[in-house]
Amino acid sequence: MPVPPWDQLTGWQKAQVELTLQVFYTTVRAGQAGLSDGGGPFGFDIHTALLVDDLLSDFSCDAIVETGCFLGDTTEYLARRYPNMPVRTCDVVQQHADFTRHRVAELPNADVSWRDSPLLVEEASRTYQRPLLFLDAHWAESWPLERELAAISCGVVMIHDFDVGHQRFGFDTYNGLVCGPQVLARMENPPNVYFTPDPHAAWPLPCLQTGRRAGVGILAIGEDPDPLISHPQLLTHHLTAKAVTNP
Ligand SMILES: C[S@@+](CC[C@H](N)C(=O)[O-])C[C@H]1O[C@@H](n2cnc3c(N)ncnc32)[C@H](O)[C@@H]1O
Image 1 (cartoon, rainbow, N blue to C red):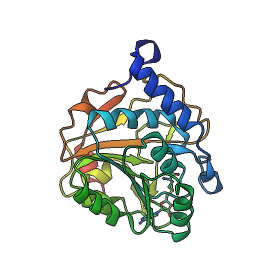
Image 2 (image 1 turned 120 degrees about the horizontal axis):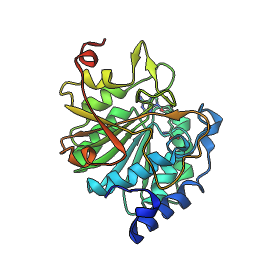
Image 3 (image 1 turned 120 degrees about the vertical axis):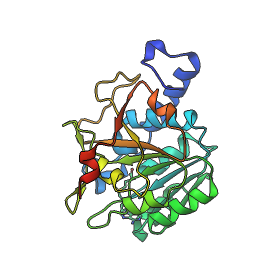
Image 4 (image 1 turned 30 degrees about the vertical axis):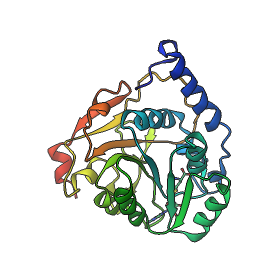
């Protein structure tokens, strides 16, 4: 169920938010070693973590898949926050995968592999019924997002570093292609609608990321998008003709 601002929360919702708060801010930001946002789960944006809480419950997800673990900030957060949920991640750089595997070695629900991310996504689509997929694999020239999207047959998808059309939120561009609706329009079966967090929405916790914040794009693949349409902190967008005709 979507989470309204604090004073409107039920006791159960308050407990969920407090758990997210506790796990989120006790996760070491190892990613500061190489990430422009200083690292931390979801680029240290707790609104994304709260959104994940909602989506896991709204879609009754049976697994979480992250692509591109780097040093494991988001992996560790997810595995500790959802100890009863399989958390699968990978990285194409062996040192990143090894570091993260070592970091989450005590968390039995976490699985880290050294491989190209579309392979993990394709395997997860065969293994799980409704995974939540956090797509964050990119580095230098490597941008597997389009191959990842092509490999997904079911689940709710969150694309990190997505252009949400607001100056506070950063996004990626690879070879002139913006990580935004243009990428969705190039899918073999583009979604009719996609979603972004409303930059003006009220959340039960403040975001303490004062540096770069990453935009997030959300879509449902093989699932009814109704929970996203009715989510109070998400904006619904239709893919426009402009996006469809972009390179
Ligand atoms: C922005 S970092 C990920 C940050 C991490 N998700 C977190 O929240 O801390 C991107 C990672 O994607 C990895 N990567 C790039 N291309 C990849 C590919 N094709 N398959 C898997 N990982 C990839 C990079 O090695 C890098 O570690």
